[in-house]
Image 1 (cartoon, rainbow, N blue to C red):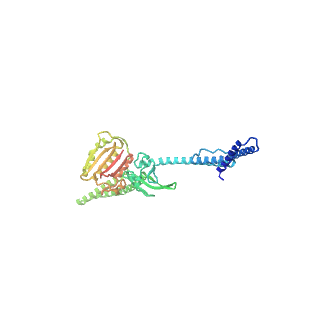
Image 2 (cartoon, rainbow, N blue to C red):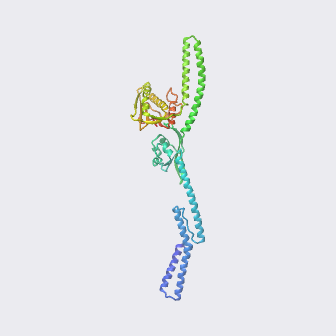
Image 3 (cartoon, rainbow, N blue to C red):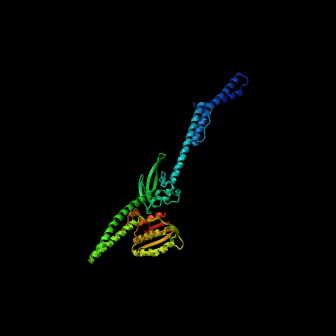
Length: 424
């Protein structure tokens, strides 16, 4: 029989007894019997409430606390031994849940802090492939001001070179890319399980420093070996040729020996140039007016462009453009970039030097542009697209600009012009 029916029968018994007492004469035997029945019903009701209803109400209150996830409240004893055992067990369970929840919250908070300050970019996606979260490193790598700006968009909608890379990654794919600013990243698309569903996420790891150190170590070793072996050999050869030049009377043979000596000296200069690439000094920075710095070197840039057959134009503002740089090293950088731009533009081409958006230096040329294959190899040691190039010019440029903390890029834009942009 259901508890509610028992409760209803007891209430009906009490109500019936009270009504009957109202109809009977006081003092009769029937009155006394009905009075006893009414008293028994009240006692049964009290016992029923104490032994059944209070435990049930306590259980109902406990269920409400669980539903509301209120793990701080506790149930009070009901005065019934078996029911109080259940109450004690419930209170112990609630204490354990509160402790575990607090521990989990602390762990999640610690994990959030780790993710936020991690040097590795982390991007999480929801089930629809839309960015649901990102940390500060990811925002910095993908040219966003804050991580919050990234939420609500798809990875393939990010307007940057690195955004295009991660937007095209397949599940569990790992790819290492070198961008047009010499930065090297390892991008991974992985997934984790939550609530029985797979949620993809991206990891973006900056490898620039490690790769540059490894590359520098490699080409330093190569250049030192080349310089040592070649210079030792050239010294002996030049010495022998000098002696032969003095001893021989044949003018034609003397001329041939002199040409060989010149070639050896050129080879020595060539290997010295290679060796100089590993001896870039630390920048001695000072406050410089970039606009004035470029104006004073305009004749040098003009001569470089004239030698390549291209035309130079300069768009330098009249205002002061303060930057904190090493003027000597920066002159080498700009000269190298202008030389590359002029050679790319060629005869009849155009090279423009301009200062835009405050202090952003842009060197533009209208040459044939950079192919996709070459774009992935820019700033790599010994890589060059020139027949007579050594592959060290852009390497020197990137070393100096990175030592200055500059952000830079070299790319052929949709308008067909190639731009080297430097942000100080």
